[in-house]
Amino acid sequence: MPSFKNSLKLPKNLINLVPTSFDQIGEIAIFNEFPKELKKYEKIIGNKLIKLNKKIKTVAVKNKKFSGKYRLQKIRIIAGKKTKETIHKENNLKFKLDIEKAYFSPRTGSERLRIASKIKPDESVLVMFSGIGPFSILAAKKAKEVYAIELNPIAHKYALENIKLNKIDNLKSFKGDVKTILPKLKKKFNRIIMPLPTDSESYLSLALKYLKQKGIIHFYDFSKEEDFPDSSIKKIKKHCKRIKILSKVKCGNYSPRTYRVCIDFQPL
Ligand SMILES: C[S@@+](CC[C@H](N)C(=O)[O-])C[C@H]1O[C@@H](n2cnc3c(N)ncnc32)[C@H](O)[C@@H]1O
Image 1 (cartoon, rainbow, N blue to C red):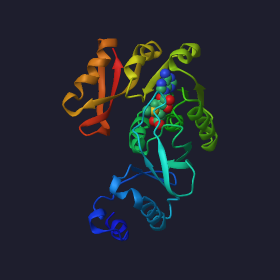
Image 2 (image 1 turned 120 degrees about the horizontal axis):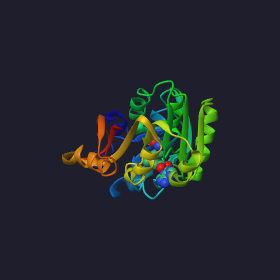
Image 3 (image 1 turned 45 degrees about the horizontal axis):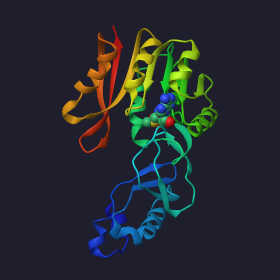
Image 4 (image 1 turned 90 degrees about the horizontal axis):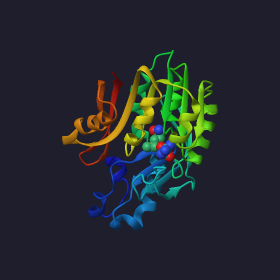
């Protein structure tokens, strides 16, 4: 954003420190925490961005990576409307959320579309770790029926709102731990999506138990460049010796040279 940077009228040595990119969730722009030299200018920077970009009403910085069992990040507003709740538009759908109280990453939008493109109209789909509903609501547009399970009560509350907001009637959303909820559903699925790259492996044997014959699992993981895809396939094979790999994709950066990856596979 050279014009944004140049319009800031900051001392020349500081201009180069202004970050060039940010995430946008709904009307909120989120930067990584600024370097300390920029701290006293952060409000000026935020207000300038709001002035130049009519779709942004709040500017914030995140001072932690996603962490904890709910995968949350700490957000600090530096300019504009003092709210952390917004409505994000993705793949022609609307998602309401509080960006600090529920996990959401706008960077995964195209991966969600990749998964949705594989779903056939007669499928029953399970989305484990479903958050505010971006995988499950998009999947419900294609599948016969979708079940979703989310542990964070606030993310679950937003998922229920988002189901209504998008007028979806073939999606059942459950609040709680996959390990306790899934056995109670007494149901098997054609496709299971596992978007918890930090720990999907712990839930793999459960997913295999509730997958129909010829069913497909989308297994998310983090992987170093040099270990991809072997380390993720090794994790899967600990639980299921014979598999057919349908695709293996890098679908995001986690840290330098570490990717968010997905292995699509079918147990044989
Ligand atoms: C990386 S986020 C993905 C959320 C959503 N699928 C998305 O893409 O926006 C993982 C989610 O799994 C939830 N979670 C973690 N452990 C869980 C468990 N044992 N059962 C159900 N949900 C869980 C967290 O609260 C978090 O919302």
